[in-house]
Length: 420
Image (cartoon, rainbow, N blue to C red; front, side):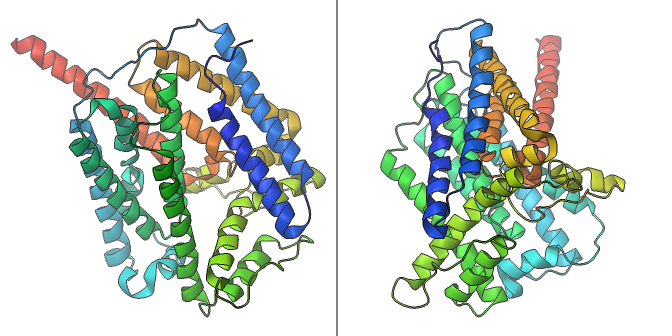
């Protein structure tokens, strides 16, 4: 059986899985084989679901498909403006209404203040949270349409995307927006491949991609430094011991690989903090396999955070509150191995259906659905995507903007027909 859509994009997450497996084994001298098997099973089930659906559905040859108005940036400017208004609304809500002084307490403490007290949602908060990730859609469209757009246009859009991403990260006081943006960008590269284009535009040379990755890692480290200064002495070794101890609480893992002094102290400790934060799902997934948590439900936590809690429902107890557990571990904890494999295969089949819809010429909804489905799959190796409120809101925002686009297009057609 020939795999029609290549394997590179499928192998990429597996490389990260082996990297997490190797890193945690190296620093803790304890290799988590259960985690490795679980992640490989999750990936293989997705591939089977995707491949089977591709074989069943009609095959269409590679061809470049374009939006009806490939060079227009009106909708990009509209969504970027929505993002600016959302950022302004959230800042007004938190700075003036809730009294969080970002300029004096800093990013780290401002984030902790967001979770303190009982604050009723205002119209500014609702508007701001809903439209906060509007910048993702111009980012997707620009990556997909790179060859059809002028360099000045691309530079202008990416500059605005960067500033909005920086503002969102500052307001939220966390790194989730950066992670979400990176995954959506990677998913957009994969979607280009489904359209018969190269994975990446010529501008994104391997060196430049390495620079982007390095800047992202540096940014994650800076956030740890902010929190170290805000909630501790600012000493990287003490903060490393604190965070590592928190992430390994209840396990037999020993945090003995930090650096207490020397010229490489800061770099080493913050590097390990980044890696530990990104890989702590390894030993928690191992814990899922070897333990049983009958009173905890992990899967719907994000849905409760965004929706159900607004209706007065209390979130169910979770054995992993505050931690990032890969989707395979989360679903296995709640539904067992067969449930986990079924969800992965279904996600693969749904992604294949979206790709086939994209390749028959539907460049509107199909592009965004494919990008977000692939982003879901990439993120699933770190966390169950449903437990990322920002991603849930971004998906809802995409559906809303799609509806607005259809309504606007219909009205324009009616007016044109009426007065032509």
